[in-house]
Length: 262
Image (cartoon, rainbow, N blue to C red):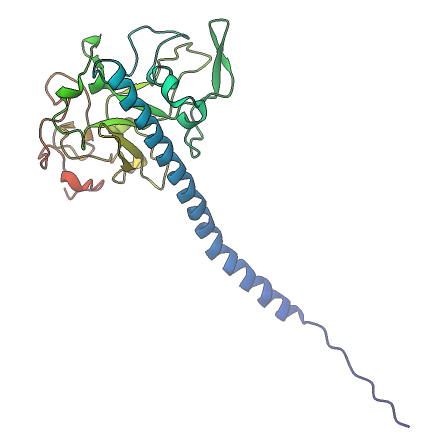
């Protein structure tokens, strides 16, 4: 009786290298896709935070004789009454003032009238046209009736905050002058919330190249410069939008082109 012997052949080195190369190529293709998907999910969560805060700010406005929630009330230091503290009785959730993509704002708290390391991270800020002017340095109330175009007037947006243990100023970075200070956390875009309560993703910006997102109704500074940013405060440009048309002082128009043709 004859017996047959089967010869078992393993993979050659070339075949193994080909398989490894294919896996490496697939990983190089898929990993960025997975990263973008995760970032998209974080951006949606961030947008939801802004909408909830917006609802709280609208409730604040109704309770305070239609005065909008200000950036802060003028008092500085660890116990400054900033927008995040003023609106807390309405939102009752300190976690929603944190954007999931914020990797730069400090995590702090206040203990015995001192800012210390903690777990409160403020990822958003209020534009200065809603209560603070840097020149001269002053705070002022803003009535809802003053807002002619609530659908384009920004009330809250993303910014890397700087209320640190070192400076002991809870009000630091609770207010901002312009889109050059925005945090472009979501694939070169930033989330914005408006007076009417809606929230959306901004036009693209390119911080390394000093190209800033712009919005309709806002003047730009420097005037007609390639590095223009929309401004929220100052002496010669709009403090609150007074029109809803294309502003010729912005090189990119209302499309928000961060790289306008020179």
